[in-house]
Length: 194
Figure 1 (cartoon, helix red, strand yellow):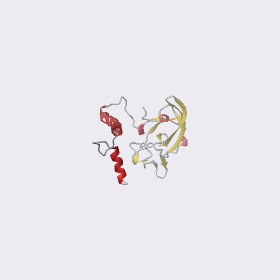
Figure 2 (cartoon, one colour; figure 1 turned 120 degrees about the vertical axis):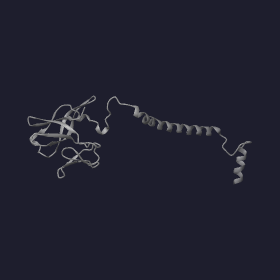
Figure 3 (cartoon, helix red, strand yellow; figure 1 turned 90 degrees about the vertical axis):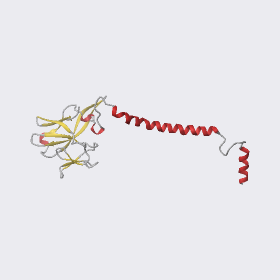
Figure 4 (cartoon, one colour; figure 1 turned 180 degrees about the vertical axis):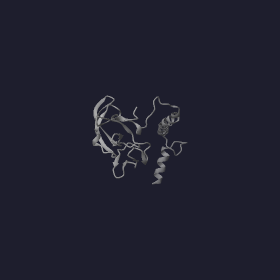
């Protein structure tokens, strides 16, 4: 069997040839393909590396807000809406309310639900908080027994005043503008919204 194979090799060889394949076209193609793929990989890696290197010299014309600090259209100040009557809120107990407000986002106009926690501090003082955790935006739950707002996602804990008590949240709960008119609690957008 081995004699037949060596005889075929001898027949296909020309004088001065080695044991390597005789088709230079295939070898050249493979070299070019591997070089091209390597160049493509290098280009894909070079673009983000160049951006990273150039970033310190780049200055945005307006401050860039991280996604966790972005203001959704439902929380931008677009007019006062009723959260309920002042007498409906118990002193010292945050209450979750859902209001419906008109929202304009780019070319879309619609009514959208907006949830907030309304906290009646005293007989005449009310504050409202956005229901989302300042860490990654998970919805907060108020636990009556603990007197704390708890984030179920990453364990963020806030007191009734919205201050961070534990966990990863980088800042206190976001306050919503409030006012009392004729015994009615009105809320608008976020207090720190531009």
